[in-house]
Image 1 (cartoon, rainbow, N blue to C red):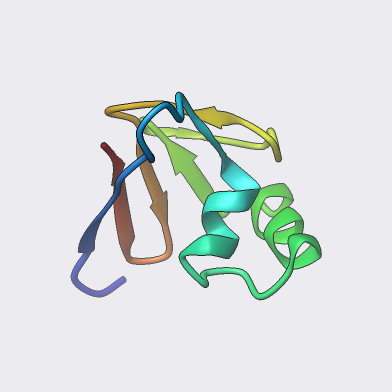
Image 2 (image 1 turned 90 degrees about the horizontal axis):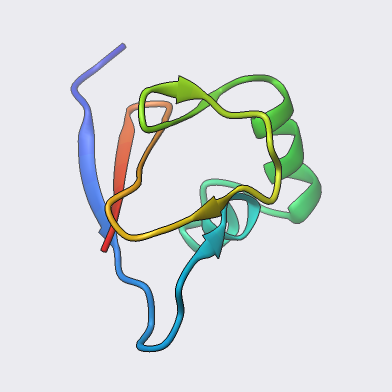
Length: 75
Protein backbone atom coordinates (compact mmCIF):
# COMPACT_ATOMS: atom_id res chain seq x y z
CA UNK A 1 0.00 0.00 0.00
CA UNK A 2 1.04 3.56 -0.67
CA UNK A 3 0.75 6.61 1.49
CA UNK A 4 -2.61 7.08 3.13
CA UNK A 5 -4.62 10.05 1.88
CA UNK A 6 -6.71 11.82 4.52
CA UNK A 7 -10.10 13.36 3.79
CA UNK A 8 -12.98 14.68 5.83
CA UNK A 9 -16.66 14.38 5.06
CA UNK A 10 -18.85 16.98 6.73
CA UNK A 11 -22.40 16.04 7.61
CA UNK A 12 -24.94 18.69 6.69
CA UNK A 13 -26.57 20.68 9.46
CA UNK A 14 -29.27 18.52 11.03
CA UNK A 15 -27.88 15.35 9.40
CA UNK A 16 -26.95 12.90 12.15
CA UNK A 17 -25.40 10.19 9.95
CA UNK A 18 -24.66 9.02 6.42
CA UNK A 19 -24.93 5.41 5.30
CA UNK A 20 -21.65 3.77 4.35
CA UNK A 21 -22.81 2.84 0.83
CA UNK A 22 -23.95 6.44 0.21
CA UNK A 23 -20.64 7.83 1.46
CA UNK A 24 -18.73 5.68 -1.03
CA UNK A 25 -20.94 6.96 -3.84
CA UNK A 26 -20.84 10.64 -2.80
CA UNK A 27 -17.03 10.57 -2.64
CA UNK A 28 -16.94 8.73 -5.99
CA UNK A 29 -15.09 5.75 -4.52
CA UNK A 30 -17.92 3.63 -5.93
CA UNK A 31 -19.60 4.42 -9.24
CA UNK A 32 -22.96 2.88 -8.30
CA UNK A 33 -24.82 1.48 -5.32
CA UNK A 34 -24.05 -2.03 -6.57
CA UNK A 35 -20.35 -1.21 -6.76
CA UNK A 36 -20.44 0.18 -3.20
CA UNK A 37 -22.13 -3.03 -2.04
CA UNK A 38 -19.39 -5.15 -3.64
CA UNK A 39 -16.60 -3.08 -2.08
CA UNK A 40 -18.20 -3.50 1.36
CA UNK A 41 -19.02 -7.21 0.93
CA UNK A 42 -15.45 -7.89 -0.24
CA UNK A 43 -14.27 -6.61 3.17
CA UNK A 44 -12.33 -3.72 1.62
CA UNK A 45 -13.72 -1.15 4.10
CA UNK A 46 -12.82 -0.57 7.73
CA UNK A 47 -14.80 1.62 10.10
CA UNK A 48 -13.02 2.71 13.28
CA UNK A 49 -10.36 0.03 12.70
CA UNK A 50 -12.69 -2.95 12.15
CA UNK A 51 -13.71 -4.56 8.88
CA UNK A 52 -17.26 -3.40 8.12
CA UNK A 53 -19.72 -5.56 6.18
CA UNK A 54 -22.94 -3.66 6.92
CA UNK A 55 -23.82 -1.98 3.64
CA UNK A 56 -26.02 0.67 5.26
CA UNK A 57 -23.87 1.16 8.37
CA UNK A 58 -24.74 4.56 9.87
CA UNK A 59 -21.62 6.68 10.04
CA UNK A 60 -21.70 9.41 12.66
CA UNK A 61 -19.52 12.31 13.75
CA UNK A 62 -15.89 11.24 14.44
CA UNK A 63 -16.18 7.85 12.69
CA UNK A 64 -13.13 6.99 10.59
CA UNK A 65 -13.55 5.04 7.34
CA UNK A 66 -10.58 3.38 5.65
CA UNK A 67 -10.87 2.18 2.05
CA UNK A 68 -7.87 1.55 -0.21
CA UNK A 69 -5.38 4.29 0.68
CA UNK A 70 -8.11 6.70 1.77
CA UNK A 71 -8.84 7.67 5.35
CA UNK A 72 -12.14 9.56 5.71
CA UNK A 73 -13.14 11.26 8.96
CA UNK A 74 -16.82 12.10 9.42
CA UNK A 75 -17.21 15.60 10.86
